[in-house]
Image 1 (cartoon, rainbow over the protein chains, first blue to last red):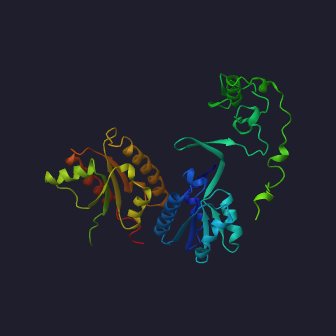
Image 2: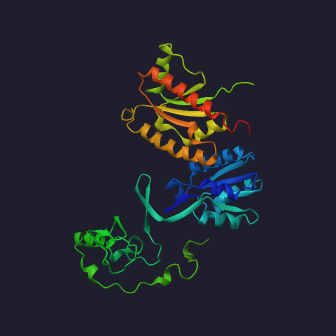
Image 3: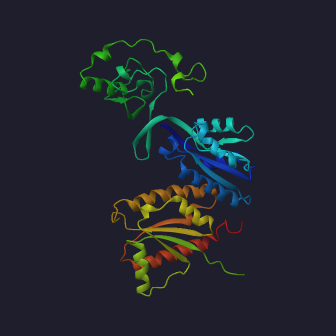
Length: 222
Length: 137
């Protein structure tokens, strides 16, 4: 999932300081799962903004709506009815949501309530960690299903580096050396031969160097 | 000038604080009449939205009273409530309302006198803080 973390209330309130009525838009996708922008968090943010503004003597009216996903045009259509009456939209989706809303409602200011952090998963209740670097050219088949692109701070392709000490990374004693993990797992699988292969130069042209990437599939087009 | 009488909403777990409030009554213990009690099956069911709603709808203070730590009927409910309240206090500070208007207390069903103390303590605190800034706006 995409993991996001809410911006401080002060910052969000600053975006809408001149507005009298706003739409606070949640997203039922990844940010609901990582507990930062679902229905509940949307209502909490709306309430906090209302309280703040009432105390400041400039009451704010809010409308809340949580779309199934903000990254699909059909799910934001339903907001059309309320967008007309508000001065601005606050999106609690990842960075994709505000952009979709801005595109769909060109005359309405759209503000992000979140800082989008990474693609990852939950390690425990309340703890999320980055697992995928979205590099566009997956190499997990030769690293035992453990990604050195994002989980190694140096993104080393033929590791480990000299900083690996007792299975830990040199940047932090809390961080496992991902190449140690890869080694241990391949050993367990009886596939240490994979680690001995010298990896070819990684094709970074499939990563984020050439502007926004696009996936096109004719077979699912209508 | 009319003196300020705080309006305090107390969300009480039925296994402890709610029963303690009942006991305080049976013991004829006097306590501040400013506290309005709402029964919960466990403080672990508390939702931050409900606490915010209480403030928006006119509460000067809100207290959540659950079992003694380690004694929750559902094992972790009161610990979860404590964490949620800690996060909400931070939000209340950011809004300007002030996190000190919200507090968590722990007691057992046998602590009727303690319930009365909590009611008095919270009423005193809110009296010192004054009316909710939301009221005059």
